[in-house]
Image 1 (cartoon, one colour):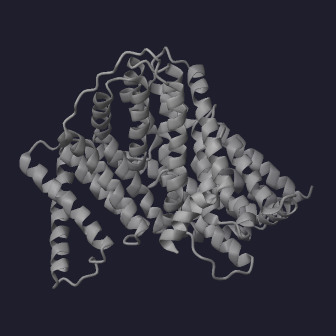
Image 2: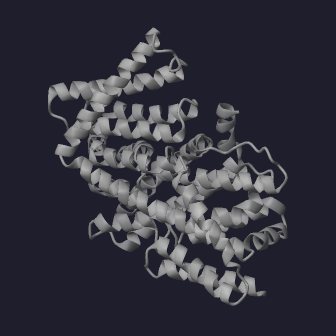
Image 3: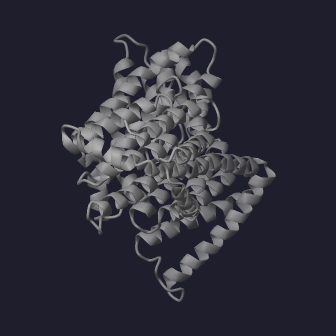
Length: 513
């Protein structure tokens, strides 16, 4: 082992030790490489000139327009969670199912899928599901372990089902690494990889995972032959429409504007944040005039998206379509100002903004720290070492993919998903992305694999959030045993995606190419 290889090994061991010690992750990810670089320079095996590139990397992160979508999507999720829309939706579903165990569990899964596409914030989703759906499922007779596993697994669907913050971060890393790897391999005009590609690529695999969950729940909760007939309450159609249609339209508007090419990811995130603000204020607003104005602004925002999808958004202002677009914009501005004022006076907007700053700060801290880790890793020659190791694997590029997937799964037991993205992709991605393997397929494989990290003990965050609010009669062991089948289903979905790459590549190719 050479001196550089020894320092690389020491840096990686120190990195994991620092993260597991409990200090903030961004301090460990930045501090250990910096200390290793200084010691390596003193030993004559590291050139400190590499660190001169770090300010440029920080500037690149802060000026990256794609990453501006992260706080906007976070704000969208926090606003929808604080508006208590989930409680209304699950209450309507509970009345429609009549308390039947299987129907209740499947309703929670369907509701979680919709909420996952709306919020995408694991902590808020899991806690909300425990408080709202766990009592209803247990009252309906659902086993506590199955209920625990279903809530934890359903709460993580927002990491795969777009629009997902995880996919935004992964798209940024995969896009950059793929471009560099292809250029290093001699391809100076590769097709760019966008977050829109990943959003489209994740739709079908995400739905496959939901279908596997639904199949398992349906089999586990098969009704007894002589079970009593369940009486379902007749819920008015108007209540169903006004409960479920607004969040569905918001999701369609955000995703549709991206997939149709009308808006960039950052622009669509801004649309989602404004839409969530209007929706939260509409739910919390008791004044009839305010409701009408905020509702009109929401309809105007949706109308602008429809006009953009129809190609009318490019019309000049002196045309009827242009005048309509201008009027819609004014209505949105007025409604947004009123909505913000109402939520501010209610004390909801301040808390949402504080949560957004806290979560976004954590993400960007890890992003900047990981850029220093990647720089020091290259300074010690780690990129060449990884390339040689991957090239020497029997089985070629597919064996390298299998190795990376196995490593990500193991790291998921001890690291967060964001940390894994910004450690594994820059360090191990280039040898794979420099081949003819589809970067979209590889990215969705990583996203599906990362989802298991939220359910695997001892550091699965969904387990922590569940345990923090679960009743005392559901033990930690009950929770672990409940999530095991869902982890296996996640791995089964990963196997399906490996066997059928078209699940991730067909829709992006059909839409964008």
